[in-house]
Amino acid sequence: MSDVAATPSGGAEVSARPDASATREPSITERIKASIFAEPEAEKPKPAASEMVSKPVKLETEKAEPAAKAAEEEVEAEAPTESEEAAPEEDALTAADLSTLDELSEATGLELDKLMDLSVKTKIDGKDGSVRLRDLLKSHQLEGHLNQKLMAHADEQKSFALKQQGWERERADKLIRMDAGYKTLERALAAEYADIDWQKLSAENPTEFNAKYVGYQQREAQLQDIGKLLGAEQQQHRQEMEARNAAYLKEQRSLLAAKVPEWSDQSRRAKDRLELGEYLKDKGMSLEDLDSVVDHRQILILKDAHAWHQLQKSKPSVLQKVRTAPKLLKPGTPQSRAAQEGFVAQKERDRLRSTGKVADARAPLKRLLFNG
Image (cartoon, one colour):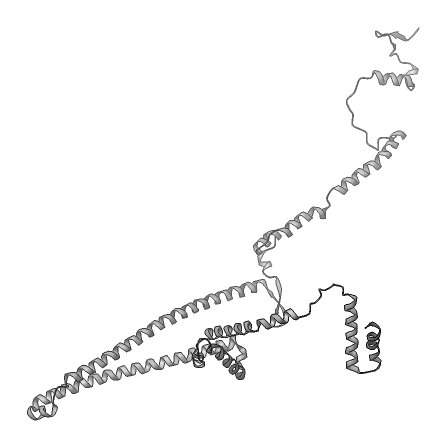
């Protein structure tokens, strides 16, 4: 009895009855049919390389491994390394616009107190050393404090000097007015008793004579006391002014010596004084007028004016020297053959003049006879 039954599609269907032929391996035709008429299945995950035991799969895996390795190497080559990943941070830190230690502390994560203990190299009078930033900051703050104090003291001194000058002018004016008043009282007293005939009054009226004479003596004594006080005040004022002028003259001389150190040589100073006096004579100033100048700034101005005058006088000769000076070649400019030969000839003549030997005369004579 046949085991094959007709199917609705007209194909042959194998019976499901168990048979010995069921255990046999499907033929090539059956596998092709199964592949054609098989329903599409869901995509299954690819088996691992270890599960592919068949020879064709192993060959495909071995072929795919070099490509995978090449792809991994390309990815690794393109992927930044740890040092390259850290480079942007370092570049960002280097390129950061750090202007204070606080910003450096924030950028590096170091404590500001530790940064202040860093040392920097120093050189004092040619000797190398080091100092901490903390000590530099302290020194800078102390120096700034002292500078502010000195500036404030200088301003106070200047203000006090101006006030003192005002007081001195007021004092001098008062002394002048007091002296004028004293002389006025003297003239008034003399005018009051000028018309009295003391001898006649003494003979005719002794009582009136005694009264007027005693009054005159008393007023004259008062005027003399005022005159003594006024004279003492004037004498003290003159002494103070002389001492102040002497101190000012000493200060100006020190400043002038510091700014014109060559005048410490008395002969040089005397020579420059005479030359400066000759220059100022054309300007209407005498040598005595020059000696009366005390302010060192005015002397420096006169000295600079004289130096400028001397420079202007020598300018034409200097320009003439520049015009007549030989032209110098720029570095790297090749010399002509004639210039080179002229240089060599000059060296040969110089050697002959210095030695006077016959051997040194051969080259100049040869050049003169054959190149002349």
